[in-house]
Image (cartoon, rainbow, N blue to C red; front, top):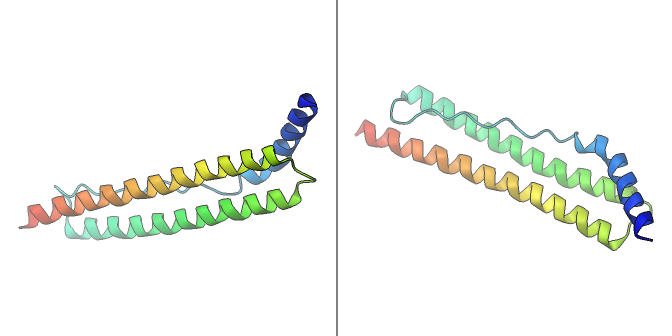
Length: 119
């Protein structure tokens, strides 16, 4: 029974694998050093961060949609498989949110450094 379950999970993961690559994780935003950056460089950084955040929102939506589609295509999935899939999705989603928070915090630090220098 365990062997059959593991085999079914493995087959489902292989079938879902091509879709797993459909959601591209955005490239990390580059942020200017507020201690040395010009106003124009800080504005470019702001635009880059906004673009990155929008791309991350698209990535998160893609993850959710892709998972919904994959689960809908499964043939009588077991509860444990659905729970495992939900756990993996939550980890990916939470890691992306954490990365977004890090980028926002990093940008804010550089803005404060820029403003402090501009006094």
